[in-house]
Structure formats: structure tokens, C-alpha cells
Image 1 (cartoon, helix red, strand yellow):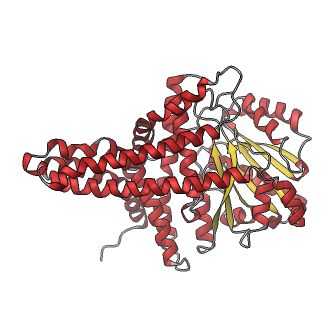
Image 2 (cartoon, rainbow, N blue to C red):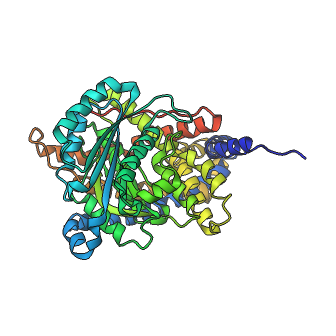
Image 3 (cartoon, rainbow, N blue to C red):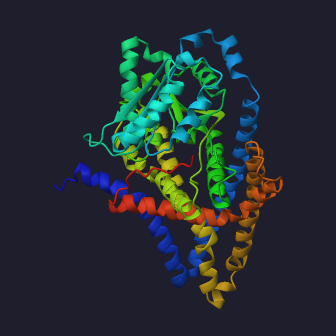
Length: 495
């Protein structure tokens, strides 16, 4: 009897997401010529589904915005101090992997850290450079150590060696190395793992001053505290005023996508900068070091390790990072495309999930089904929806014969598309207003007229959804489907 090898099974799973996307796009185009009525049926069903999806996105984004706004009014340090005397036992470990970032970026991050409202003598900071940039990194690290080395319980400077076995150069392998360096110090100090929260941040991440107090408060009030990750709101306000309109729209859209998922924790994965229990990190074996998207993989590792009893807790407080803008417009657009493609490569979680989650009989069936649906539906719609809505959706109406055009269905199709566009405009207006409210203080070099421009920039949204949404998502899924695996591309940061 023919037996499929485990490698072939995994390759089939890698092929499925990309195959679904290409079958859909090619199939709709072919049907538009050969069976336009069938194509119209499909597009109307697809558009109605997206109309519903846009409505709930607006609802959940508004809920998250309200909670976000309320959370930023609270002095979490005072609340934590009064309600949870255990907070004094809690230590914070912060991992900052870096590669090729300029000294000014590192200085800005550390200058923000020393302003946070939480005792700095509870912090263990690991600044981890790469051997590939060892000379520059050690110079920068020496400057950081001289200025900030005595501010924390311990500032660990480490260099991640290149060429270690079973590693891919990138943030995941660097963070894994840095995490083990932190563990060595923690073991020396005999600090209980249960009393440690660890955060893995992009090196340009500037957390809100109340972030660690809020994190500790959420941690101490969580009955399942040790088996959870904690996901903040990712904003990109560090250089938002200087960034081009296209890039601002892309990054604001990312924030609002996260808003939607924060209000629905059952859909929430860890993304970019996040925090978790140090005990859970040790239990799952640290961040995976041979993949691109270690930030989302880590919560799947927890779900599998703890047989489904692992949560991602929403945190309605911000961490601010840089956009992909690095000074040159066209280079920044290239950086933006690569960054979105890297995020979209989170599709690599699908085969991992199917192999390890479905192979674990202790995980409840509804948990398996929920995560499988969320992963597949998310990656599929990311790649297909903008192209079908804004481009391919009009093909069958254009190529249909007079007999088809005379049907009630064909005559109502444009109306359905119009409703979808109108709903999208309401969503755009909501996003535009909220994005203005979330802006940091306006630099003096910009006039008040800049606000109007930042409202009008949202007319670029349909183009952004295609160029910096569908296309990089299709690129990422096609690479996985063909076995042309993506390496880790570092988004350049401006100083």
C-alpha cells in the first residue's frame, strides 16, 4: 500500500492556501468568459459576504477604539499598586533584536524606556545585535551602555552568532538567542519564572508610559496568567508625520485590522511587538528560529504545548513603531511591499497548525476548527478580496452576452457592487477620523492644513489594498506553494 511521507504531507499543506487563491482568481476570469452568469453568482455571494464583513469590522473597530481611548485615561501603575500587592514580585524582561538600525533609533527607544511609569530596577534588557554587523553594533551598544547601562537591573549586550545550525537569519533566531541570554542571568539570580513577563519588541518600539503597568495588571488579574500572550495595539506614530500618504494609509490600516481582532480575542494572534509569561516561553522552547513569522508562531506553540489551553489577551494600550519610510520615497515603497509580504508570509503557520494541532488529540475539536478557519479565511481573503472587488468583479458584466445581461441577476449585480462601495466609504470615513484622533502631536514644521491632507489620503485606500495588500499576499502564498521559501527581510528604519 502506498504511504505518503511526512515531508510530502507537509508540502501538500503548504500548497493548499496558495492553490485556493489561484484557483479562485483564475476560475473567476475563465468563468467571466465561458459562464458569465456563474461568475456573477459567485461575485455577488462574495460581495455580500464582504459587505457583512465590513459591517462587523466597523463595529468591532469602534468597540476597540472606545476601549483604547478609555485605557489611555487610566493611571495603571496606581491601580496596579493599590489593587495588586503582588506586583512587586514581577520582573520585566525586554528583548530588543537589532540589525543595521542606526544609533539614533536605538537611542530613541532607550530614551523612551527610561520614561515609563514602572520601576526600572525590575527590568532586564537584552540588546542583541548580529555577528553580520558586529563592528557597527558593538560601537552603538557601547554608546547605549554608557548612557543607559546603570538605569536598569541589568542591560545585557549580546551578539547573535551567524551560521548556527537549524537557524534562519532574522528576528526569530536573534530573539531566541537573546532569550537564552536572559535565561542565563535569571537562573543566576534565581528569579522564579512565574514572576517574569517577557516582551519581544522590534528595536524601534516605543511603548506607552503605562504599558508595563497595564501589562502587569492584566497578568495578575488573569486566572490563566502563565498560559497566555498579551497583545497591545500596534501603531506607527514614530515617524507618521514625515511618511508619504501611501505608507501612512497602509500602516493605519494595519492598526485598524488589529483593532478588529482585539475585540474578538478568539481570532487574535500575537503580532509584531508582544508580551508573554517567561515560564510559557521556556516551556514552548523560545521563539522558533528557522521561520519568518516568529511573532505569530509563538502563540501557536503555546496552544499546542498546553493542549489548547492558551490565550492571547487583548491589551488596549499602544506601542508605537516606525513606518517603512526611510527617507527615499521609492525605496520606502519597496520596503513597504517587502514588509507586507513578510507579514503575509504568516501563511506558513497553516501547515504547522494542521500538522501539530490536528495531531494533538487533547485539543478540543472546536478549537481546531476555529483556528483552522481563522487562518485559512484570513489569508485567503487578504489575497483575493481587493482584486475581486475592485478589478475582477466587473469582468463578467463586461463580457456577458445580451441574454445574460437581460437577467434580473445581472441587472442587480451593479447595485450590489454599489452597496459594497458605499459601505466601504462609511468604513473609510470612520478609519480616516479615528486615524486623525490617534495622531501624535503635530510637529511645528507642519501647518494645520496637514490634517486635511491626512483625511484626504484615504482615497488611496483601494489602491493600497491591491498594491500593498493582495499582491504581496499572493506573492507570499505563491512562494510557499512553490517551495520558494521566503527569507527574513529587515525593514529599514529612518533615524
